[in-house]
Length: 442
Image: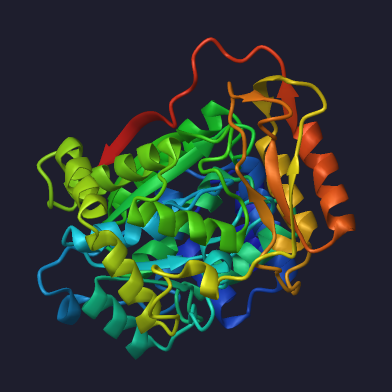
């Protein structure tokens, strides 16, 4: 069937067959489907949705559009697992969870992305480590993952190329906010990575992509059900992003925070809560723990005995970074020349935070991209971010701004000051993990 016929069927709210979806995805891969046709298809799906069966078919077709990794010769009995987050502020979970899972007996070939919109990206954080290769060749990726137990890299050109093309078009055609397209995009890449189990961190709140709880619940249910029917064991958690997860936002600052977490020098309570919850679910799903509670205890032990920190150090060195990064982060990580406390305009308690605005402040400082080709200043960002309910004033600033110059500080200060509402805080602080609504075994 011609691409325009498939588009017309979805435009007219008809259900596409598995074969029609496979044909369209093949056209995305070999460029016989033009950009205009891809955009029209994305808009038709965005407006009219997809059935569960259509979403499963789209996921599998995009997964099959490129290579599918096989870890059978490397896993050596270890379950192959990964974690995915929908993005947030101060979220360094991947940096601490991957090595902890490896220390607990899993194989973690984690394929991560760059920052998207106001949210930070794991690859950009790792890019602040001198020498670290986020784009190793396939043999190096396999070797490091096998020897260390974890390797965090970027998406390779041959993994789900149809998804990569469709996503680029969605990003510029106002069709990102489609649950079926988001589901297929995330899961096609994870399935192509050869996983056996996946845990999903679906964030909701002022700093999340899914600002409403209803959208977060819908996305979690879709990802778990489609993942199950596509052959992947999935657990989905809903977590809070009405305030930053950790005390720092910005690439090198977040790597420092991750190292402090791994070594026990400092562990932000919300970051610890989310990390243990996600990892506990994943270890249970993969058969390495009897239940999520036991999984959380196993992970906590890897932080306490230093084995998670040791795996992180080995991964960094094996992928080209400094061998002594964990011992001497300030010797290697970039720092901004200006670091200044930002006091609130009035003293009081933090009642609410526009968390997305904090992400935009980091971008305005140069720590993210306004355009896809922009270079990143890895040293800038925010630290000591005040949380909801915390008393702020002359002795306790909203945060410390790490800027390249006075103009950058001033621009970020305006955004941050506007982002914080000083007033009556909520009666009870929200937990970082809001719900564990969906757990589906393959």
